Length: 58
Image (spheres, rainbow, N blue to C red):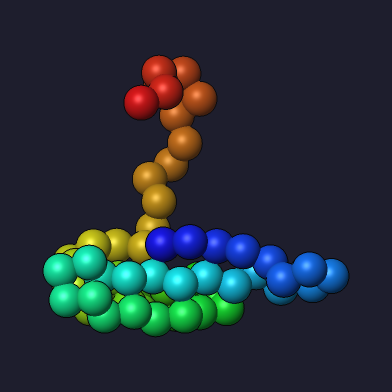
C-alpha cells in the first residue's frame, strides 16, 4: 500500500496491490481500502484494539 497527496491538494490518494495475483485498486477513502483488504483476508476486522499507553512499542 502507498499513500500520497498531489501537489497543492489536501486529498489523500492511495493504491493497494495484492502481490500474489497483482490485483490492484486505487482509492481516496479508507473504506475502499478496507473493502479491498477484506476480500483477501476474510474475518479481519477494521476495528483497531484500544490503545494501551503503558504497553511497549512493538
